Length: 205
Image (cartoon, rainbow, N blue to C red; front, side):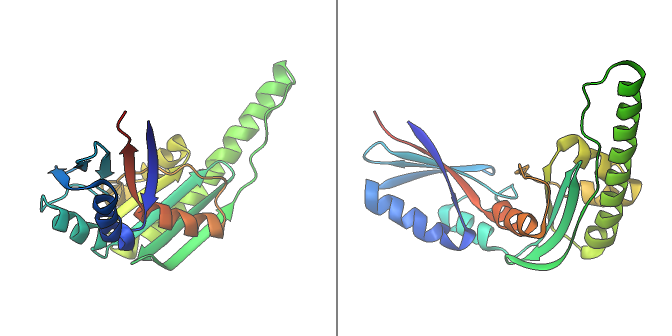
């Protein structure tokens, strides 16, 4: 049986210690992208290295890596809205969220359906254009170390295709966040989720 937990960077060292206290002596298998813990009672945990690669391949290296303060950008784009934020050490430094109305689907057929489809496409283009301008204003000049995106992948790709965001596109790292239409609280939570460390736990049979 497996389950996944998410741990804030500040709690990771204590979590690793607690895993050993609960399950006995732990062997670490460290790679640039993941750290696998195998305990003497057969329990195991796989820590996904955030903002890979991990340079120092050790437990101490992992803890130092996750605690490194980075200027983190978050870009959320959906048809119904967008959000951009700059975080440092978990604190939101600058942000902007907005929304655009995009026509819903219609059951009408023929010419009417085509007209609604064209209107939806036009509205979506306007929404993505607005999101792009916010990314250019908020994220591009922020001297980011890493960018995490979320919402709709095609919408995000459309925004990042803008030539003005070429350097920003090269900073994108996982995870890709699933979010509702971005509001301020959604953006703030996305910043926390982007920093959280994913740990997959497996129980022995």
